[in-house]
Length: 165
Image (cartoon, rainbow, N blue to C red; front, top):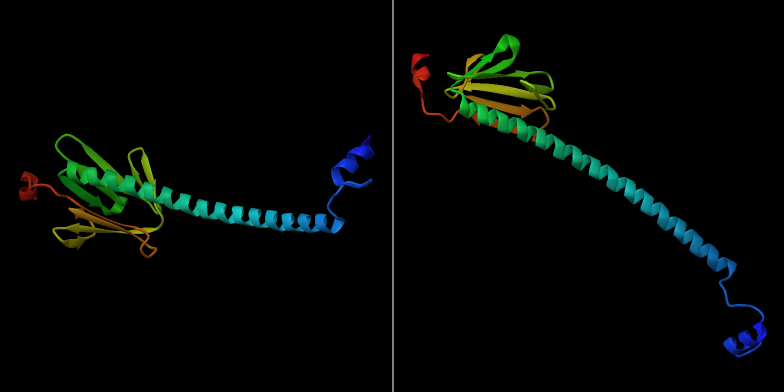
């Protein structure tokens, strides 16, 4: 019965089924191995690139949170002082005060910590660079070229404190 089915299938009496040769199977196996190796190496490269992008996004997010907090405080408080011996930026108004402590690679604002790569800060009062005392503008630059730069200033109408000082 099986031979009859083969005869009907191929038109002649054949006892073997059509199949690939050993050489053809080896070629397919080698090509599959090469493609699998390329896919694994590309996947590793893509993962490395994604890790770099993720780190950049996290750094930008931290920087934007610091910028936002400083911007709110620069415009909320009318007295801003830099205390050099404590490396602290102190904000105050009639009802409240808050401080930022600048550490080597981070800035601490009460319970918030903003990690930053190495940076430099420049303080200004009425357009002049100062090292301590009252300030009305702040610039924070990274040590790496073009990594980040923040420039913040107090955009407030003069209060009685400006005239008293």
